[in-house]
Length: 230
Image (cartoon, rainbow, N blue to C red; front, top):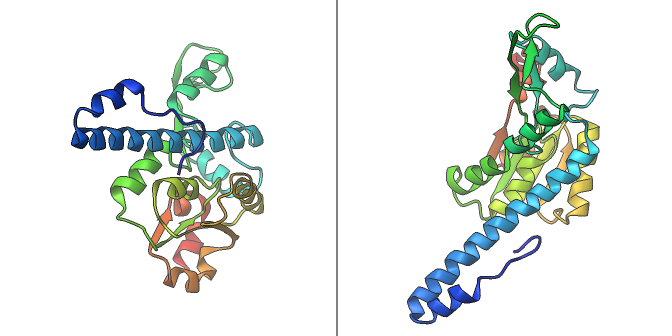
């Protein structure tokens, strides 16, 4: 499956490949594989661009009070920079524009500054590719559940980088559920992805049929210790 604008193998490559049938098959296959990889990346970047236009720069919603409170309790000042939405290069550009900063002032008004801690509640595109193509086994016919799916990055990554038959997101925030469903509809991903407004603790039946369960920062930032123990 090819997403976005495709660039076909060059005539030069095909001309050389015709000198040897075996080499042609290998060279064309390699270029086709790279073409698919590139277009999967472009596809995910298009979704990220769409999401950036809908969210504040820190990609945090006012309803995420527990996560924001826990970030404030960290020893060093911490900001949320979503890795799915912003690459390192994009963060650098935002810092140059003054829209974001990597440092905070140790004494207001002085030049004494220290690096901010950055945290992300999403995997980056490269991390998603590595997860589904190198860490996990072949997921053909399998069910993947992402607990605390937020923006849906794991679901979109699983759609393009794996053969999982079902990709299910569980999300407590109605706003994030609505946002993910908008993306599923716009990019026609609903044939393999579903998002439920639900607490994982109420999904015993679903979990029994789950082959891969993914959780990123769920317990540390989004569930109180008392709930974890219970």
